[in-house]
Image (cartoon, rainbow, N blue to C red; front, side, top):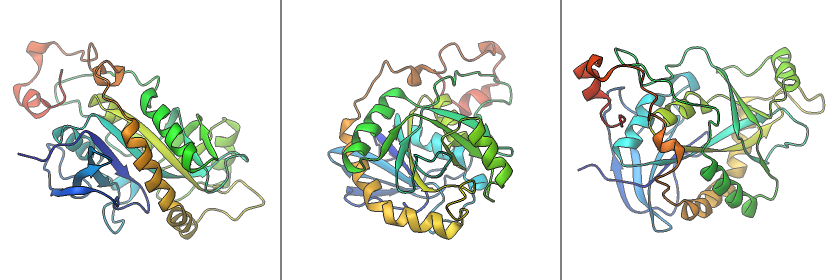
Length: 284
């Protein structure tokens, strides 16, 4: 039997393991959508069973566009996870969001181009609601935990997700500012959409590493800059996780868990049996 967990953690750039896990299992999982980014580390943290996955793989091997997000989120469901905390390095699009600050965004804007963003198709159609892309319960827990570690933690704001791997042009960065976006990154999508389809509560902690390329008083973002600031803030990220995880209470009535209720447009008798079998862990 595959080791089970209650909480899933997706580590972003610079976070490839969690210290303090006890009773650890290393779990390899196959899914109908291929292999996840890496082996899952399943263990106990603060009395809670946690499944940890490095988004880019250990050693940072995967481009943002190469992250097998469908396999990752499907595998969390196979592990029994219903709440997922995601950590992500981001650039700031606002003066007041300074490098080393934390942001708990409440909205998303999709600028990706080449990423599979749904589990459905092949004879089954589903349209989930994404009006609120992040679980409100997880946002509250992340805000509380992060504020106790990093006082400069900001609540709300829109995360614009670009394709990458190159950073923004100056024109793009200025346009995103004019549109009122707060931070920019490369990995929150399609994760958030897939988490909703999978009935997973999903919350994101954004670690500000730079001012993208719009700020005349700061150097334009580089990979070295991002990784250096993520490394500087890794202890804070781990401390926030330790404080956040005990705050998460199972919420069976959370709307995230019922996202597929009424969302499947395909008549049940028209669904291909093989597709039904393949998606059985997700279907209501």
